[in-house]
Image 1 (tube, rainbow, N blue to C red):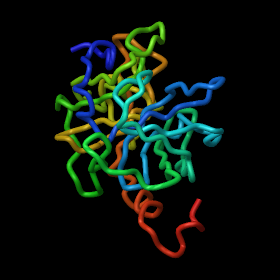
Image 2: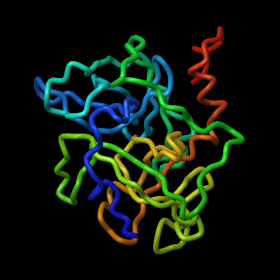
Image 3: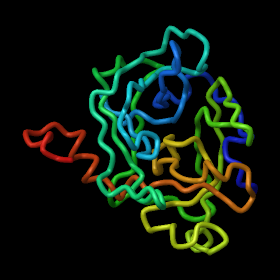
Image 4: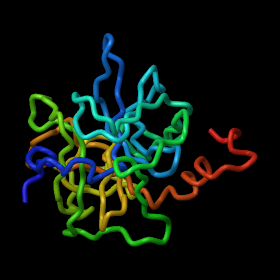
Length: 239
């Protein structure tokens, strides 16, 4: 098995992954795909902190898309109302690389836009060797040329002991992380059609055989996620 992530893979069937989000940054009059994300509730998208460590800065979230460039009737574009980066995110090793985006309004559910379930505390994460899937508009090669249409790939979970070896990630690899072949930053790692990880680190080492990708283990953050996405009186007091 190679560790080349979305390099390779295949084009996804259009709108077959209706939870996929494209986080886009303004560039002149246009918007450019920067990171992936995925819909987890009617007004919430999950992604990685390293996508927006300094706040939204005018970025938009686009749902219901297959092609980044073509006008598609299914596309819905949102402003970012709130951005909740995990307070314990560590930029030195990408620990706690999980972020929640509150869209400026609930999305209109359709065949092209739906939430995906995510693994909660007590759920079983995939073991080493398990086949998992990731999808995104990440670069297909080391020259950072991005595909226009959503791609998907089946990858295998790599043993944590291997990923904590000094010739892999060493002490930067923590128990909050899962290791598998590389995906598109911020996008989901899926096991049995449930999101179990967020694509975190590995993007810089694209295509190096020794470097699989690191994914944030979602189930470890259930309480933090619920604290933001579940409406209650004290919600806005939290960081």
